[in-house]
Length: 285
Ligand code: MG
Image 1 (spheres, rainbow, N blue to C red):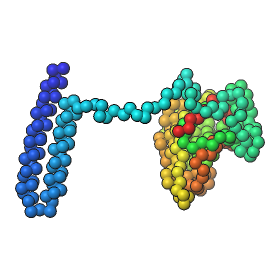
Image 2: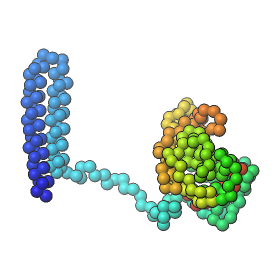
Image 3: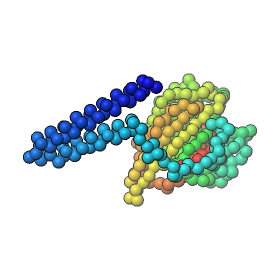
Image 4: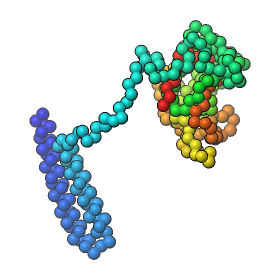
């Protein structure tokens, strides 16, 4: 306590000294630069310095904290999930293990993937599954599991994908002791950004993705206004940190942006492997 008071007192004396010094400097500058073109600019800078020092001194000596408080608007109240895996009250439940009513086949008609227990499993050849509703900016939670019986290698082992807006793929792959190109492994934005770390669980174990996604914006002349941005946590660990996408994720060639709607369906990829998904919820941002 004593130390704090002593320190504050010393700081105050120091500030007064600086104010006096700067004022003398101001007078000196004004007199020296009497015929100079720099005079108005120099005086302005010196006055600004004095005001800044005085403001600093006021904050240190205890100004009015209310001046920097914001009360309106007030964040709306929502109820969190029981755990971080569970949907909060304002989330749209895309899949809770019971039915695929929020989904359809990308080829049209009902989703044809296998529904069992609390999960849905890719049926190889059945095609991509997509949400009936379209989404833009969002927070997405999704859980996935690659087959416990390991078959194939590289891109052929437990491959699927989560396509934000049906265009921007967050890779799903079994990369537990399974090497492939870095920008194509689990946690990557396919062929654009490798994950910061490989935090894959062994095959047959459930894994989580928590995604924060900002949709790209386009100008009326169809040129890009702002790119898509994505942040991803895999199993609670940051793997993509606000990555700015180069365009749609492509298997071959350079990604480019093509103007599209503000909201588009979320799609899950059929890459020929029986990958499972469960507990999928999304919050529109
Ligand atoms: Mg894939």
